[in-house]
Length: 193
Image (cartoon, rainbow, N blue to C red; front, side, top):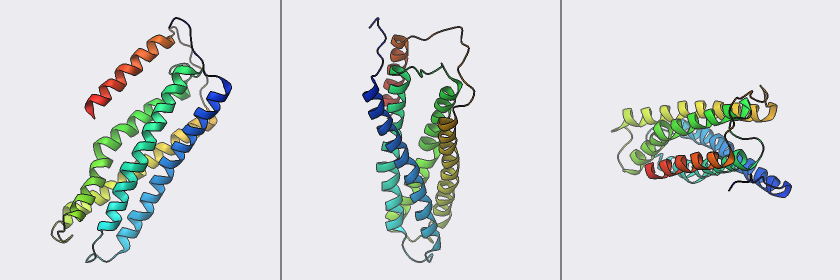
């Protein structure tokens, strides 16, 4: 692959459509999680929150996470096969840094907090028996959702306004090197999963 491959106009439009739809699902899913956590916090402490916790669990794992991976995939394609690149513009680099922060936040804290509330509610134990852990997981979920929402909105603002302009770089990472780096990173993530 000695020649640079750039996506055509129709392929870029399709890629943009998939990218925007998947980020919409991610942001919409986060909003729905806020609503469900609000509903859960208004129900009586003696009632079982399992259905709401299960809905939060499914929306997070089957909706938000999958759409986030699609966003990352389409972002990789954008960076490799269009003129935007990874390091040609400060705003693109900023978006990748924020995406990596969201990825770490989701896998390290938000996911375990949501899974923890669902597992406690699913265990059939009274919430009063495990109230401390349950409330800790619920409040952690809310805190990390707030942080994730802020970061998603930051990415959205950076995408719309495209501040900072192009980088004045002394080095140029070619498409072949970029593909090799992205491939290595994806393989490392897949081994972790």
